[in-house]
Amino acid sequence: MNANQARRLVVLGTGGTIAGRATQANDNVGYVAGQVAVSDLVAMVPALAACPLDVEQVAQINSKDMVLGVWQSLAERVAEHLDRPEVAGIVITHGTDTIEETAFLLQTVLRPSKPVVLTCAMRPATALVPDGPQNLSDAVAVALQPDARGVVVVCAGRIHGADDVAKVHPYRTDPFDSGDAGPLGCVEEAQLRMFRPWPQAVPERTHDAPGLQRLLGADALPRVELIFSHANADGEVVRALLAHNPVARRLRGIVVAGTGNGTVHDDLLAALKQAQASGVAVVVASRCGQGRVVPHSGQPLPDSAGLSPVKARLALALQLLGI
Ligand code: ASP
Image 1: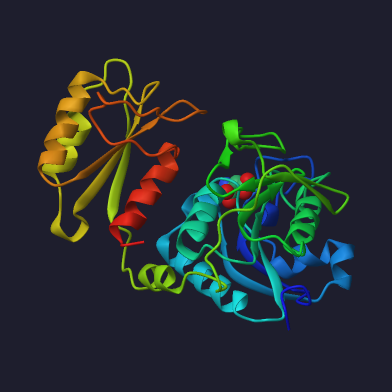
Image 2: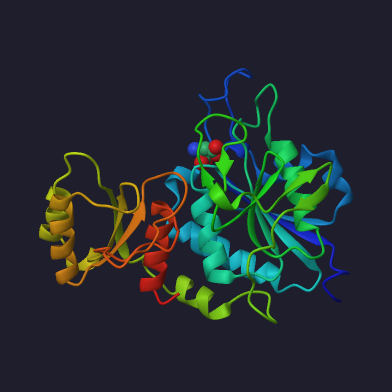
């Protein structure tokens, strides 16, 4: 069976608001995330009845509580299904809070040559007008696109790449932005309009197997802390981290969200240099919501190569794992 004949989809549920339940239909914020089974979410979208699907509940959590164990299970299930020739793509239902981290992790570790489409909702499944069913339906349209590949996030009719997507709003039903790069495309009545190429995929395989093995073999992610530079900052947090550094959870890295073009308060920088001297990897990102640190010869710390502080933290942890 070649890729164009593969039409089967796999839907993996991990929880989130899309699976949330509130006691009142008009309550879009006071709900409990991760309550409704992914099979019931699929059943709410009549159009999916015509599509051959396998549905699996991998986790049932609020994504703010994401842990390595869930990422490992998810990556393993994704890789296993990607290897099935009849599977065209994978849809993952997920909470919006850390969807950008899960998407980035899956793209960095697996670089899949079929589409892996994460989707979500800002309103619970019990809402008067839930946004989940349309997002799920759009995600399925993306996962069935014959030339699609890589890990993307689909929400509110837009397709975002794993490296660029960020949650930028805590309430509205289109809470994601891809910064200067913009979304990869959009989904309109199940038709795709692409503006940019799909994310990079590993050649001639369904996913990057060595990356997956390293992730699955980890007992914990290397400890990388994320701190901010700000007015009146000092180095106390860094000095405290260095002073209380248990062998079992040894500090391996610090990402500092710097002001503007990755600048860091002098007092904080002195402490970060001390951390660097003791073998801790230090990376600077920008706390600005858009743009990147523009490299220059005078910069005192290595920068995150355009990654947001949150993704730079994860990237450094994965790098320390050898991925
Ligand atoms: N806290 C929820 C979660 O990330 C938010 C959401 O899904 O919108 O699981």
